Image (tube, rainbow, N blue to C red; front, side, top):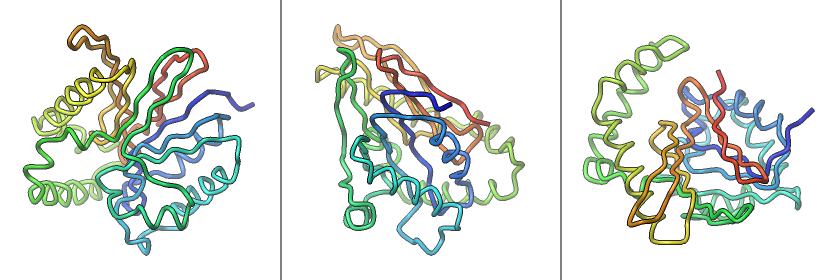
Length: 233
């Protein structure tokens, strides 16, 4: 029997990448009924759809069918890999890509945005980031299914930690300027759940992880505004 939640959130699937795990995500989606589905950025790796294997199209077909259901609200948030997808998405999926989205559940004010807006390293070192991304994908192709090498390198690297911290701090400060209780981002590929107090305002920050590493991660929100992070191996 399917579980019923108010909102289902996932990010950073990077369809078209050999690291993407859309079948696992599809299986998770099929286990839930939800009123709202939020695609929290970087659904695609790039706009070269020739790279998409059949199993990647399977997830897109399922999403397209959901969008035909008038009882489900579909929200697509723009990620740094989605900059070129506005016109394509409106034609292919019939949905507009947003920079951010706010809504209320049980008196709690929620805000979602991808988070790359707060990534100072990405903005200042875009060429190096492209080189780093190439190396990341090269190592991943040689790595085990559990990404043991990649996980070790990321634990030893200050870059990923710094990006994650910048994102958390930036999102928290941004949320504190508005009437926001809970802010949820993607981008860093690191799951997170942390309570912060900024200028006297209590903010809870979540990160929805990704679907190119182990485990795959998604977030659900109940009708009581309870936020749950799910880890799928």
